[in-house]
Length: 405
Ligand SMILES: [Zn+2]
Image (cartoon, rainbow, N blue to C red; front, side, top):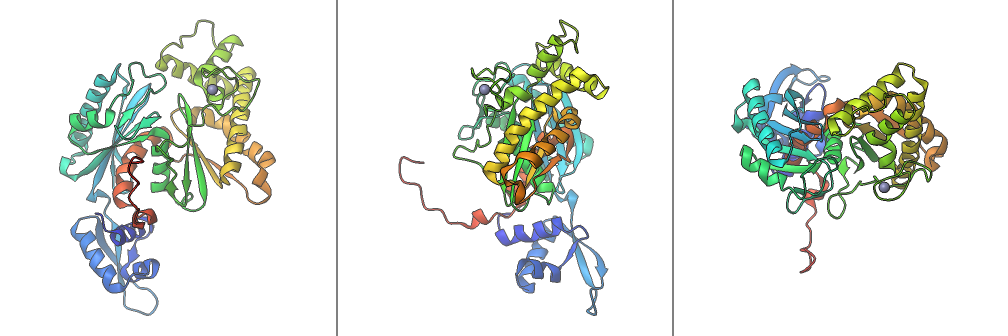
């Protein structure tokens, strides 16, 4: 797909809601009509773009509209989480055409076997040939060693110490595999699907078993030196807050952790003493019970979540000010349960305390992609890597000096 101008044209067609004519494409991209015609010819031959209806524009002769062919190519996405492994098959528009969720098996080998079985099943169910699949994205809890394609030690996944998941999944499935942190994959999904974060600075705040952030500037993910930017879990947001495994108190990760919320709910009588919370699955179910109690009007449960939200909001305000962010999007596996309790608190905190509030508002949104944003993001990585034009791709880099690889 490599050609930059070809990616620019495909992106333009993909993002035009009613399609785009060759003349409009020339106007939007600054390329000549001849160049556009050549590129469109190639995209049609590749099956990525189709010609549609003819539409009259002004007094000129009607022009043929071009549309993305969503079924022109597919990508697979897998999200490995302590509770479930979610696999999706998406078409070129990023829509899931098939999805499978299984309980996370114990140990990396069993997880990889489950991924291989799930992806085979998705292709069969959707009736899609392997050849039409461009690749497989894996989203995993960070941090990730990108040089070796290994997850380092993800929270709550027992037996996962430097597991080379990228090569294991590639071997088990036969697909080219891209590995990314779950939060970064979620941000890529938002960028691939939405328009809101293509300009300015945006933050994705991920709530699962850990918390993490991803940052995008003008639609491009900020990766950091080892591509692990966004590990904000130990940002202290309340010196009197809950203890954290790092030895401090009131880290943002501990303040939002299911363990903290569930422990507090048991201690204050929202949940029965002895409520099982030892495994990730039990903990997840207990978190659901706390959120449901709060939604049903239990004042103590509501207060537990509001205090947590206030702590998180303080951290988000610092991060938004640090980056001069205009949009903050929340998502991840715990988000749909926390959203009704968190959103109003975070919005109020930013409106009242962000240093930059006099210059611009910060929009706080929930992800539109739901609980499966990690898996959709993993699949989006494949599409994004092949089809999103990046100005940085055009920069000719000087070779790194020896020893600094
Ligand atoms: Zn900490």
